[in-house]
Image 1: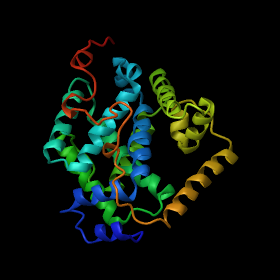
Image 2: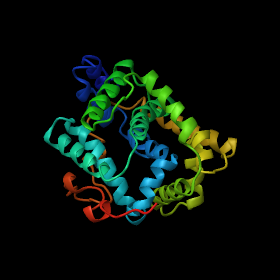
Image 3: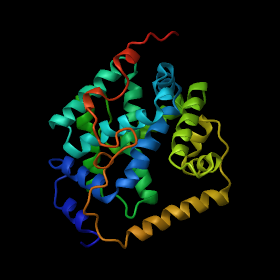
Length: 290
């Protein structure tokens, strides 16, 4: 297959009417690795940088006790909707499960908007920097429409309906609510520990250094981290740009690289039930003091 065969399929579709199909092709075949890094990892690091969000997550203790499973469950719920569509049986079950879990937390609507904005914008930022090509306007529009529909089903109110307005909201939110706190630092180190566990032969300090290289200045400040040496940051960026350059010469992917189309560490046989993912009822109903 030619490198742009999947892209040509996308360009024949309507970003409003066919947004779910566009998103599936884009995430499963065009940028699967990039979406894994940005959609799950960087977007949730953004959430951890907000003390309000970090405090809610840290207070339950579930993420600390089941870090890998928390990561896998989150990824499965989000990628199942991409694979099957949010109005499929599987997609509706994922949204119902997320609404059930979130219903046990006192989450401000602004926080819901912020994490949704991060889930939408972080992949765009990442792919613009490190993708083998940039996302087209049609792909950006489809990605936005996909999430606007999910947000309706999650009862998120007042979500901006354009990327420009979403970026403005995100900036204003971060100016007010993103700063360092004990919970943000705890979850950051928990997350770095998780990533380090995937590379047992690599020193944790090196993994953490590379991760700092892809965080922006605001996130570094929120986690009370030093900026990495400029030379190291440039080296990491060169490696990512080299990967993108190599990919640009390869044939179009014909096999899905979606997270849920391969075994995960928590579910090596993919034997999960989306209606039971995430914290148990016992954990969700735990009384939190303060």
